[in-house]
Every structure is written in C-alpha cells, then in structure tokens.
Amino acid sequence: MTDPLGPFDWSTIHEQYDQKCDRCERFDPDSPHLLWFGLDRPRSDRELYYRLIANFSLQNRAIQEDLTGLYECLLYWKYYSQGGICPRNISYLGNRGSELRSQSDESICEAFALMPETLVRCAPVVLALVKRLSKLELPCAGGCNLPTQTTLLHFLYPDIVPIFDKQVLKAVGVDGKLNHSFKTFERYLPFSWSLADRYQARMSQGDETPLRRIDMALWVHRGMHGPVSSARRAGTA
Image (cartoon, rainbow, N blue to C red; front, side):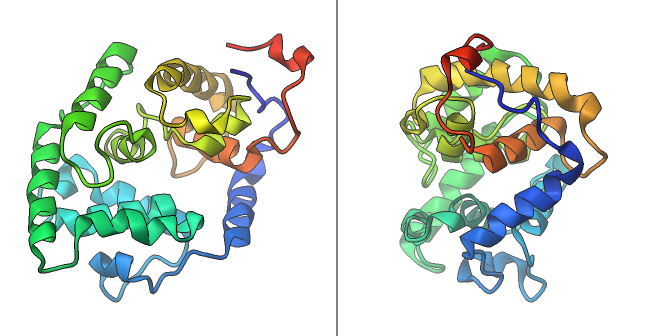
C-alpha cells in the first residue's frame, strides 16, 4: 500500500471534500431515509456525518428509541453517492411497520448490545470485532460486507476503526474490487493508523478524528494521479 498524501493540502481538506461531494449531486436532505431527523434535516454530507457521530456516541445511542431509523441514516450517508445501490441496500431494513422492519429492530438492538463500550488500537481486537459483526444478522452488514461493517464501527469508534471502501483502496494503490477482502482490510488497518500518526501534526483543527481526516483525504485523492508507479511503490507498506 502506498501513501499518496505527502503533498496533500490539509488546510483545505473541508473545501476539497465538499467539492467532491457536490460533484456527486446526489445528497438529498429531503430523502425519506433521513426521516429519523424529523424536520431538522442535515443539509450536507458533512453535517450528516457530524450528527451521526454525535448520535452514535455511547451516551446518546443508549437512549435512542429508534436505532433502526438512525442506522438507516447511516446507510444513506454511506451509499447516497452510488445512485441506485442506496435504496436497494436500505430496502433490506424493510418498510416502517413491516415484519421485516421488526426483525431489523431486533437484529440491530442485538448487535449494539454486543459492542464493547470502548475499543483500543490493537489490530487483533478490531479484527475480531469485525468478524463478530459479520456473523450477526445485521441488515446490509452481514457476511463479508466490510464497507458497511467498517462504516458502522467507525461511527461507534471514530478514532480506532477506519472506513474501508473501494475509493480508499484506489487512493493507496490497491484494486478497489478488494473492498470486501478481509485480508486486505487486515493490511489496511495498521496502515491507516500509521497515516493518521504521520500527518496528525499537519492537520488543521477540526471536528473529525485524525483517522477520519485520513479517510476524507484519501476519498478526495482516490487515484487522481493515475496508476501507482514503480518509484512510488518503493514506499509501500
């Protein structure tokens, strides 16, 4: 894996990230998948991220009466930029009031009950938690669905678990099709931590953890400089 962030301008990370999101032109604050927020809807990708982080905190999620609705908002944040994939994935939750939705409520409550209160930066511990999550019947996060699993775990432990998806992999010189490969995530996990440690001092103040800043920067980058050259591969990890 290659670090592409040496020349990255951390002072403009929010502007760069927002511009990338704007180009998607798919974020819809009036989406029915954000119903959990009622009339006070997040108006942008980043606002939704911040509010999800707040509501998935240990203190706040313990008092939530509709964890499935909150989880639906998370799935929307994860998949809205992918067009038709978004409603298809969220459909696994079932419509409100349906039997499938009730089953989703049960599986989601069970999954959250099994999550530890805190998590340490220890690769075997994180990997074991991902494996545990993959065995639960959590809608859109079972089996080898690492993109959703790591997104959920990131919102629970934003300074420990990185978001693992094809755009991140492209940015570090790895085939994006490996975004469901547990072995690839096993390699990426300590690599993401090393990037967070390497660039933390250069990051401007913000509301994200260093690990999330790395995810944002890689999402902005996502292979913009073309294939990784042999010279760049010399610095792989």
